[in-house]
Length: 542
Figure 1 (cartoon, helix red, strand yellow):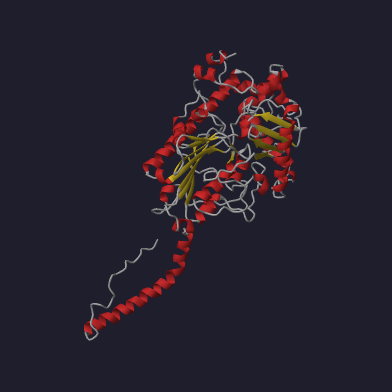
Figure 2 (cartoon, helix red, strand yellow):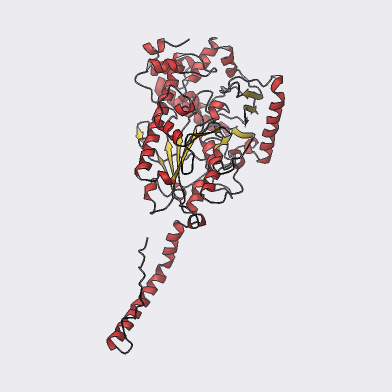
């Protein structure tokens, strides 16, 4: 930034009388130098304009009665509301619990998709991914966003906020230190133009900032603990649709320890903000992109796959408060624009949930479409006390092949082996049938985890029909792209499946020396990896 010239309190000629030859000479010399300065200033004017354009001043900043707020997003990868503040007793999360105590905890917050890229493409735009055509997960050839859509970082950056994205400090994946913040959007974008950098502390003095901190955990692969605490292992409460088995219990244990790493990273981020003295001017939002990475969680329109933790604290947020009404992650973008005193684009479908008026909704919605090589189309309506799921392909099993899950989830071969040997409860076996019902209905008041499908019960017929009508109306009114084929810029499904299967085969060839091991062989490999023969696994609870 060019230095600014200080203004003088008196004119340039006040010291010189007009009849003084020396004064006249000085006056002539000063005018000459002033003209030179003006000439060079004209030459430099375009570059000064460009510098001003890189950090424009928004009316929201120049006219605000109080300083513009800073915003911080702390995003966990694949996490359900599994913290102490949400009632978890076997996971230690002191930093997240402190965050909840200092602000507001949302008990009915849901992602719009149960998988990373589809959900992230939605909440960064404040718009359902099915509306924008960004619904397929992990697209091969992302395309630029169509007009008029713009991501939230772009909107805030244009308005004068300093916008950053970074991996949480200490992030390591497969032995490599990760510094670049995850985006994983299903549209083409340039980090260099979407973000100002990776450290919000590099902003101009007094400039408001929007900083995203991406926490990799608890995304798989989980680090397998060297030791298992038998007390904690026994205390795990597996959902009713999961089998009681030492491997399942140990895999869940590893997930919980990964959640505790999330908590440690949150603590470090909050310490940084506190050390810089900005917490009193900042709104911090902690959430996950979707639910936990378990067989019936991630990729499925289930409570486990969709419900996420959402904790908001900071400026004007009431401490120790809870919000039990429905909230979608696409509500975050319009909420921030409202707090920033910026207009909300008409195309945004989320609603501001932090203002004076809370949006009263009877339903919010979610969608699952192709996830890598697993083709599907499912829609869900989430009501005040119920979840309705529409399977557009009931001919598909929930075991619909996903190379990613068959590669990384020990529960997949375990479920198949237990099913074929008749060691699953009837209620668990229903999740492995060769086909699915077209509609599923879960009474979340009586069944908060959403594991007992009562769609055929006459008593819920009226409620189910109302929710089905709401879902159909949403599909039509938003122009749901899910019934359309992938764009021509994408490879064919067969090509994608061949590529993903190749990844799966290489993984298992490295692990077992064969590209297509049986379920029994994979299960044995996982059991050895988790050391299920140790004493802790021998005491599985009844």
